[in-house]
Image (cartoon, rainbow, N blue to C red):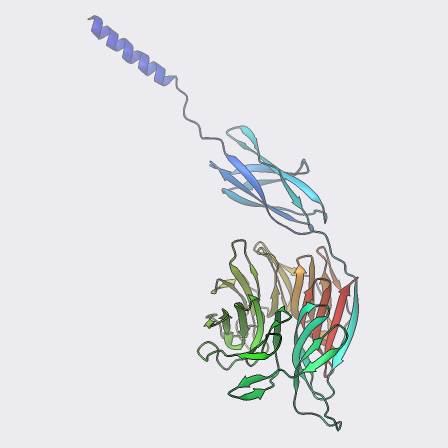
Length: 426
C-alpha cells in the first residue's frame, strides 16, 4: 500500500509541475539597417530582420527625430527618405516592437551627394561647305582629344563640290582635323558615313556604321563580323568596358558582343530599331546594359531591353512613347529620353518636366551631372536637384551629347552644316 500511494503522489506532483510551466514564446526579432543608395536629396535604406513573424509598425528616425511610421511586411524592406539637403550627413535608425519589447536597429550614416554647377562656357564650330552635313556621335578622351563622326562634304581645290565625303573630325585642343576613315572590304576602301564612336583611350577608339573599325593609335583596322552575327543592317551605337568587352546595337533589332577575338550574336527578341546602348557593372561585376527600342517613323516595338551577362530581358516600360537614348551611373537608377524624358528610381517611373521637344540623347558623369539634348537646339542640365534649360529654341538639331569631367560636347547639324558645341564647367 505504501508503494501505491507514493506512485500516485509522484504522478500528481509531475502533473502539477507541468501545469505551472509557461507557454513557449517566439524569439525576439532583430533587425539590421544598411544604406542602399543616395542622391542629392534622397536616401534608400534597407532593414533586414530575423525571426520576423507578423506585420509590424516601425518608426524611422533621421538625426534622432521621428521621420515616418512604416509597416514592414517582409524580412527585407526598403525604406525611402526624401526632402534631404545636398552634401549633408544624416544619422538614420529604426525602432520597432517585438513581443511587447521595443527594439532599435544599428544607426547608419547617409551622406547625400553635392550638386554640380549649371555654369558653362561654350564654343561653337560648324563643318561642311556643301550638301547635307551632319555629325552623329562624339567621344571625349580629354579636353584636348575629341572625336566626332558623321558625314562632311567639302569643296575641292577648284571650289567645286567634292563628292567624296569625310566621315570624322578630330580636336587636338586648338584645331579640328577633318578625316576620311576607311573601311577596307576585299581590298577596297569605303568611306561610308560613320554613326558612332566610342573611346577607351587615345590609342583605342572604335567606330561603326556600315562596319566596325578600330583605331590602335597608328592604323584604322576593320573588324569583320560574319553575316550570321550581323546582317545588312546599320549599326547605331556602341558601349563597352574594354576592347575585349564591346557591344554594338543597330537596326533590325541587332545586338552583337565582341570579346576581343570573336563576335557573338545576342538575340534581342525584336526587329525594331535599337537606338542606343549604355551599361554599367553591378556590385558583383556583372554587365548590365539598357537599350531603348523604337522605330522612328514606322510601327514597331517601344520598349527598353535590359541585358545582363548577354541575356536579354525587357525592362518595365508600358508607355506608348518612343525612346531614343538611355543612360545611368547606378544600378537602381535609369534616365531615358525620346518623346519626353523619364527617370526610373528603384523600379518607379516619373516623367521629367521639360519642354515638349524631341529629345535624342542623354549622358552624364553621375546622377547629379546629366545632360539631355534634342531638336530645336534643346539643351538641359541636371545638377542633382533641378533641371535647367540652357538654350532658346533655334534651328539646330542635336543628335548626341557626351560628358567627361568638366567637358561636355554636343554634336548635330544646323541648316545643312555639321555642328559641335563644347562646354566647360566654370
